Image (cartoon, rainbow, N blue to C red; front, side, top):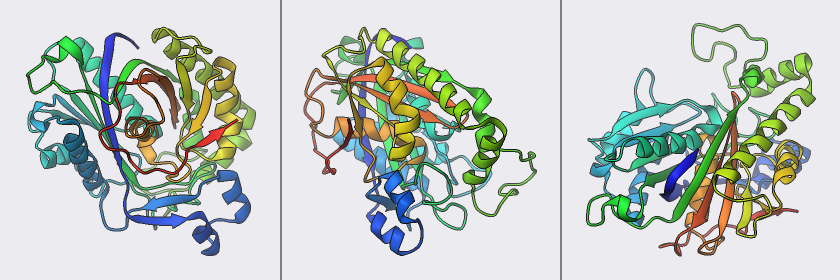
Length: 367
């Protein structure tokens, strides 16, 4: 998406106090030592007592405090998730909007698997470009992965799942933000472009050879993506996924950089930030096509969080916004992918030093 002018992004992430280290998971038999090494995580955040929508409310309220934004000025509340949100036949986005006081906003739920938060930002940007009087849009994500429905270490290959919520505010900047109005505040990041490419032929990876059933959890008592991926590999082979994903990743990164007015070796582009999947999966599927397109340093911000459901890209934006990783004026490309499959890339730059620096572990850099 080529933007008429850069949009402002303000972002934060919320993590629970609970934590399971990888060493604890190995000792408990949740994961074997070899798989733990291949994943490369140090720990996963665990939310035992706070439901996912309430996690999103916590993240949103923290963002309002940091940014100075007002909930009653929002035009949209977009909420993305992967797993159960606490109730059935019920709207978590409306609950979140009501709890934060965004009573003028239109709440929308997004079921885009792990790319939901990224698509939320794209939809928010589209709304602001298409409606000159629309107020800022809030994108939240929240997921927690608890037994018996989801085993955070063993429900999927190539990743382990951490509990977290994110909140990203998408808004206009400069004269377009109407200084003095409820819409005017300084962003943490500038959004220069977004791009999305799909590979819907890969939806079968998360369906396998299962028939479509009539009730939730009808195929197994626990979410078991390993089972459907084994069926996919048996039918299509690993190379089909790797080649298809590589094609889309190269295309989405090229498009996003071009729309931002950057080349792959532009000195302004400091980092290429990858999703929070396991290290082996990143090295096999994401990093090779990414390095085909850009020489920017590959940056992984998820070693202490794991894969945070629908919020990987949004959590990385929060880390860039709330730390000194990027100096003012420096750019980063943030890449993400999600089952279905959909791949999104965003180019952002740092606007100003963060209001509050979030204590995070040293980022894990791929070389």
